[in-house]
Length: 397
Picture: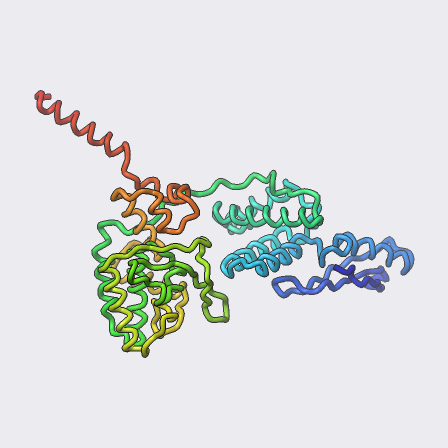
């Protein structure tokens, strides 16, 4: 990068000053650092001071600005160019706004471990106390983002060390996966069945049917909502009885949802289905053809008008269906995926099969989320105690 053009002028009170223009950051805001030099006795002396300041500010021209927030904006742009998903980029830009609010003016090369510890504590602090009020898991995500960014700054020669290595990161909050219990399943099953029978020749009915179809697919296959929205008709393998999960739908503000040929876990997979499942899929596809005109093999499988649906719209419609049938508000669309996995494990399906079906990176991820559902020694303990009570009863005790 070329060093910025440095000039000085007299400002308020006759003090020499310099204002640089270093372009715009990833958020579209101009980078306009400003510095006054009250000890400069002449223009040449002020200019020398300004050049030194500008060189330090831009790491001797290596970057537009060595301010932490500005460097992070450049880092996010790099991640975006390298293929990070729009959802990840949205999260990264939110993290940069937190940094801008609390320590954005700091020079990235002079930020200390203590500075970062204070920053993360500020994120955890409640809003009514002047903090961001984030959960520990959210702050942990910010921590990992900053650690990766500083690794990049070190590799690029901008910073000498990575302060995040020694920052005390918050412990993660472990939340039990929310799933549909046997008490609520009947109501959900009825709601899905009713939605699948909706009149899709009407816009309202088409949306209701699409929501029910997406919910049913997640329940019987464990797919994520973005993966379901990305399913095409050609992804149903009728001969070998499986659904090919090889895409994900991402959303960006102000533009249509886009299908990407990679899943959220970056791991394509085939999920087996039954003859009954195939019959449901064929029935919905036939009704779609009748309502929207014959759709080709590349058309989305879940749709309310022949086009790709937004995952957020599907999730929102499911929440309305959930409320209508009286399910707990803790049940979300993603709970259908949890329900699929939980029921498989509770009924004896092995962890490796469940992990592959869900598209997890490894079995450890599956165990971390669903270990509490595995039938194990505690069931044997309950039976032992029951048998002991029965023996005592036989002895008249």
